[in-house]
Every structure is written in structure tokens, then in C-alpha cells.
Length: 131
Image (cartoon, rainbow, N blue to C red):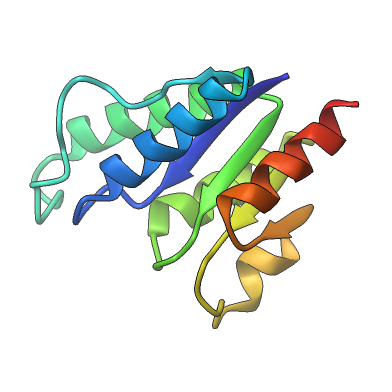
């Protein structure tokens, strides 16, 4: 069972993704690491970076194709995470959303298979799906 962790990249989002990835690896889950070595979080406007934007999107969607389960961190809104959730569902992947906050949008809820509120619930849910 391959798991990819998606989340907003900007404003220290990469560190949150890395934290969840590390926890899952510690618990012996197979985590697919889609975070590239290049840090795009400081780019404030992709309008004049069409080729780079297409490269990033292809990269991320390829990792979703490779995975069985998408864990989406949705504590804050993200265009990318929303599309990754939708894309995963169109491919028949399982989607677990994790938010420690209230979720003010019906969209991620509607496209999720499971909803968890913290790392402990995430581990329990993944163990359940594993068996």
C-alpha cells in the first residue's frame, strides 16, 4: 500500500508534509515522497512561469497515479490539494483528509473516503485500510 501525503506547500507547508511522512515511515507505512529538492514555496506568482507550473503539476499527479492512498492535509485551503483529491478519486484511489480545524467547504468532505482530525486517527485509519 503506497501512500502519498499532499498539502499546501507555501508558508511552511512542506515541513507539515514532511512531519506526517516521517511519522508514517516510523509506523512502517510505504510513503511515496513527492516533494522535490527544489523549493517552490517562495514563488508568489506562477503567471509568467507556465512551463514550470506544468512541470510541477505533472510531477505531483504522477505520484498520485503511483499511490494507492492519498492523505490530504487540509488545515488551510489549497488549489493544488483540491485538484489532487479530485484527481485521486477519478482514478479510484482512497482519499483520507486530515484537518485539525473545522472544514468550511463541502468539497474535500464529498471527495474523501475517510476524515481524520489528528495523526493518531490517521494511523488507526491506515491500519484499518491495510487489513
